[in-house]
Length: 396
Image (cartoon, rainbow, N blue to C red; front, side, top):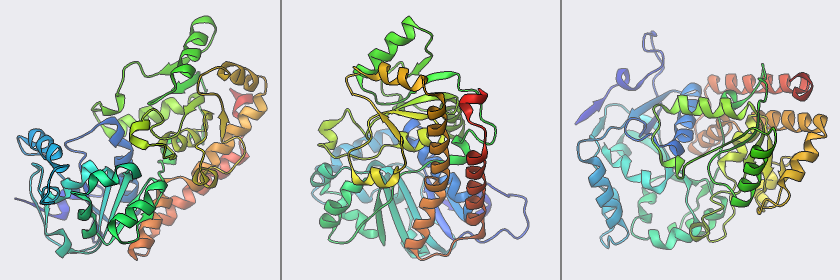
């Protein structure tokens, strides 16, 4: 059994004297699974470590983990005993050696939930607990009846899909909360030194085939630099390093004039059953100061989160008007520049991970550390620079 001491898990300030006592215990799977879609989650964890006193518990896999995890997942949907969800899926056991104010679990999907079973007796070592599951679709809740009760072991349950809150609260017979996604806006912001936007259109992840074909034709027939994924399921691929992956993504985005967006899992109607959610691309595209092209989610949540003019320039999913829309924008460089600056500024002030973690701390009853305010001031200063800067379209 692995015993976690502060010297092992406190990566920052290893040589510092009298380091603050970590008050948050947060497990991470970054050492044994680095799929591209998980990198944003690890980015969120990194921001929390910057603004608070965190023991990041690095979980690791024992030999045979992949086989055992696959076996456990297949059987979970038929587990009448409802005990499989509490089994360790083949990770090295961890024993905590101190007490914490908060046990904080950030799951990309519910598949991550069994990982915490490697941390033995965490409830005895942590005063309160929060489980924040980013992606959980309401239509799937009836299928999850064999493991759903495991969420009751947490004091607070948060989901990233707003349409899931009510049905999940009903299924658990207790109130659940909602928090939207976010992004490390410091990493994604093109400011204070905006690079030249040499990429005309950047498309990553899910896309509408009609729009993609129209953009391919433009890239073949004219001077139009279109960057896009060339193989399917890129999000499932393992990356070398999550920070390098996010830096690469950010550097591409802030060098792109236009950025393709669509509602979450827009091409997976069988999974979403029509539930409309705000995907991560909107936060990333805005933070990078791109002009977002595509479809704004038809939901009140999106209207609240992105309530400024031209947050998304709408096009038809079949691609019939996308080239016309882009051509019109190219004739209005001042408008394009204003959209870019407004998106970057609003993201810095509203959609950085620090604002989400601040709400989590409030839910857990913890006062923010001074370092949280330091990051907030940094974001405000960057946003002021955006507002006072010379329009990008004029200088590039």
